[in-house]
Length: 437
Image (cartoon, rainbow, N blue to C red; front, side):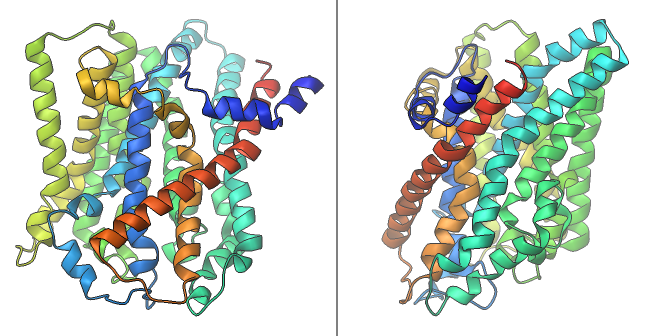
């Protein structure tokens, strides 16, 4: 045990784990590509958001009038739609939980006992907590203690509230309830996703038990959760009104009441639960070509529709959406996008992916996919350190934005590699020792 403990912190061993292109036995290989593309999409949007117009009253750009002009173009609709990337992550999370745990829950119910059920629940929750928390808390500690020393300059004071919030409210992150705090008080506000995901994960424990008792009852429960989430999103949008683009103008009312609450985001996770159940229970075999063509056509059309239909609203001279249309989009866009991504995963896993599967399942994406969690935690710090350490204004142009995005992506992955090497991989190895595996 001592040798395994020491090996868990060995740089050479952890480096091999991170850079290995082996996806693991019975892995859903295309997931790595979906995860990598999703995190790079998030980085694209945040490269604009953090520093250009994220913090109220602070502009670091020489031509701020260019921002609304830029966001009115068709090209930048993909940037405005980056919240859908988070729904991709929710879908993947739900799918993996259902896919990996449904058989274990069924075996538990076949030989039911209170002690075994309690043990299963304890291991189930501990695994997720241990997977997310060590690196999460280390990043918060570094942010809290060292953020003041990361940079300086005329813009730098605007970045300091990041550390102040963490000194006060770090405990909410540890308990995964920071998504219930007002946005202005949140420590690492981008980590709301982790709280939502943890709450969905705990909720899924009860869903798994219902599925094990009766598949029909479990599926009805998931359907009710999904419909409830869609209804909550529509109601919240209709009540509070707004969108993410204008979130800072309404004092984060949209962010706090519509964008981040788990009851408004659960629908995409439920799509993942459905997919995980189907993939686990259905024999793995190809669909016929007619089914495949129909599926790919609907998924492609649905995905493009969800991403680009807001252009009718954002474009110059566009038609303002009524509150009913906004509510409908808020309700339907997330599960529709998640369903489109779910089809991609399903088709690729069952041999109907073609060139898409070859790209998403490329072994070179496996190490980058492993770093996606660390990148998610770290990239806003990298971006804001860059922006608020500047002593000159940033000139917005398409070339400069692309150049900035590439730089942020490369640096974020480099820092994430160091963080994963030093902490994340070690704690994952320690879990196996603790659990006796």
